[in-house]
Structure formats: structure tokens, C-alpha cells
Length: 480
Image (cartoon, rainbow, N blue to C red; front, side, top):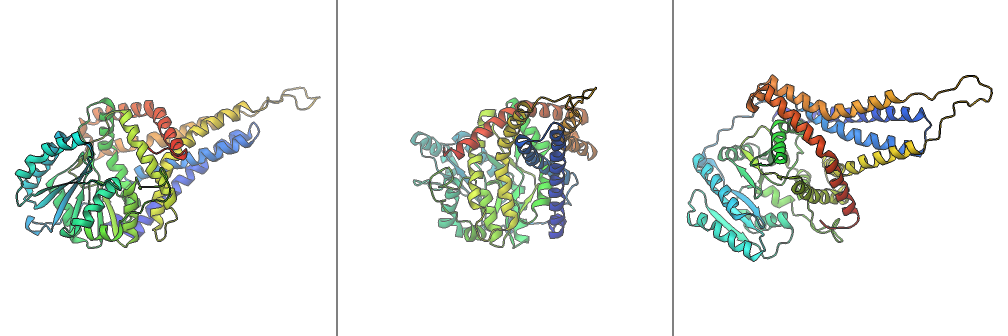
């Protein structure tokens, strides 16, 4: 077992990250409380202190992940696996009203990569496309693949009439009806790509570890064309590997599943991951939208290990190319994560799985908390009574209130540090280990990091408003 997956190493990483987050939260709350005490302390100050503690803890938690990921993981184990040793494996590609030409191109590219490695894996397109015109184009575009199918890489296609359960239901339907033919399935999104040597490594890892139920890769974003998309692509490539190393240390053997670009043991999936319908109407009832985290939690509950390995290359996905597309996707994620409120008390879940649910919930509630902090801070300032410079009728000199500039400036620098220091540290790490050379050298990488930080800062208020609106819509009962 890899050292970062040892239970005591995982426990140590969690203690460090949680301790750092709590320490930063206490420091921020104490600093703001001291500023409030300088001019009287009322209910608005109490609320502001509570909100700054929550939001700072969230920022510090993210920073801790980056700091934990600065040190490289040990090299991946060498697991030679010949193409003749590959057990029955399928690549599942769930689709729903996708661009058929792009889908065809991705499937052809992956088939070529599988043939280079002589990997005997099947491609299975699980279609939930329901628009008649789109369905016709989809079938026409994919038809050449089925006429060119070989014994090495067979292609199968199935279109569901009953689209119950969305993507998770689509995969579950396949597992129930055809999963017994396969030992492993590699689950992709319609916009995902994975290289043959990557799949060969994933299968070798699963073969070497019978207790491993799911192995998640870190997909890199590709194909971006807009400024927004290119910035996301750069951030995912430059920063995400470090954050993911920290996440791997924190998650240990109870890791995440992001719904795609992962290999799953069919027996584990069939045993543990039949998802229920939540009672009541959407948005909190009905189909579980953020099914991936729930499936990971159910696998861990069933005694299987779930791991994420950011060292595995050759795994790709496309990302949204503009703010509106990102906001639409984020709206679905928001509703799915807030559904997890109902699952926090589910019986038998691992404690860390519940903690991961809380993280996902806070990822959206914190945006509301930031907005609430700004409003409460303004109200606290507006409702402060005018200072009494002469509290004693017979005093000669005025008594000026204590200046709270120092506390406010210290708080601002602390918040800014939690936002910027992780990216600065990642840049230093990239230069130190030579990774920056892949981004045009140290100077070019520095310019790119600066541009990404600037763009992120510019759109942050907009994203906060989008997320805040999404949270309010979900709690208002609007299904997204």
C-alpha cells in the first residue's frame, strides 16, 4: 500500500488540515470581535463574527489541501500487465443529446489508443437521447463504428426509452442487465477521453488490489477556446495536481468519485450502489443528482476502498467555455449537493463520508455566508451609535474611541493570504521541481498565474451571486 494511504498518515493529514482551518477561523473571529469591542458589541457584531469564522474556516480548509499537496507522492508502483492478461473490461459512455460528430471523434480517438496498446476492451454507448432528430443524427454518426467493430474493441449501443435516474440510472440499468459480462467498467462522460495506457494501468491496479472498489483519476481539461475556458484549463493543469495530492492525503482509502474518468469493480458497484429515490418532490426529493459522492460513500460503507490518484496521466475532459455554461452546470451541482443534507444521517456511513457530504453542502452555503457577512457588516456599521467624546460632564479633554484600523487591515491581509498564498506556493513548487518549464518557463508561468488570479478575482463576485441565487432557488423549492 502507498504510504499516503496508510491509516495513520491519513489521520495525521486530517488533523493538520482541520486544526489549521479551526486556528484560522478562531484568529479571524477574535480579530473581528476585537474590532467590534472597540466600538461596542451588539447582535450584528455577533453575527459578523460567526460568519467570518465559517467563511475563513472554509478558505483555510482549501489552503490546507494545497499545502498538504506541495510534497510529491511516492512514485506509482510498477504493475506490468500484458494485453492478454486484461480481464473483461468495458468503457461506458453515457450520453444524452450530445453533439454526435464530436462524440464520434472522441470514440475513434480512444479506439485508436486502445489498438496501440492492443487492449481488448469493449466500448458501450449508453444513450438517453430523447429528441427524435438528435437521436437520428446520433445513430447515423455512430453507425460506422459498429460496422468497423473488431474482436479486440467491440462497440455496443443502447438507447433507453425510460430515462429514470438520469446518468446514474443509465449506468445502473446497464449493470443490472449486462454487468455480469465484465469484471471492470471505466465510466466516462460524453466529453471525456482516456488513453489506452491509462486504462491498462487502471486495470493493473485493480487486479493487484482485490479490495479496491473504485480508482478515480484526475482528468485534465482540454479543448478550451475562450479566455474563460483557457483560464480554467490552465488552473486545472497548473494548480489542480497539487490540490489533488492534498486531497488524496486527506481522503485516504475513503476517497472521492467524480462520476467519470474512473474505473470501478462491477461486483462492488452491483453490491453497493443501487441508489434510492428520495421521498418528496424535487429539488430535495426525487433522483439524487450528485450521485457520485453518494456512490463513493456506499462503496466505503460496503467495505470497499475508494482511492483517487492524481499521478495517473492520460485522462481528459472538456470544461465549460463561458461563465453562463459554468453557472448552469454549477446550478445542477448545487441542487445535488444540497440534497445530501437528507443523507447525512443515513445508517452505516463512514464518518469521513459524512464529512465529505458536509464539505459539498458548505461549498455552496459559504457563498451565501459571504454575502450575509457583507450585509451584516454594513448593518453593524450603520447602527453603531455616535461616539461620546465627553462621557464625563466635567472632563477637560475628549475621549476618542479606540482605532480599529489595525484589526480590519489584519483581517483583510489574512483573508487575502489564504486566497493567494496557496497559488504562490504552488508556483514556487512548480519552479523548484522544473514543472514550470512545461508552461513556457518560470517567467511565462508567473505571467499565466497572475493572469489567472486576476481573472478569478474579477469574476468572483459574479460567481458568488450565481451560487447565492442557486442556493435560494433550491431552498425555495425550484427544481433546476
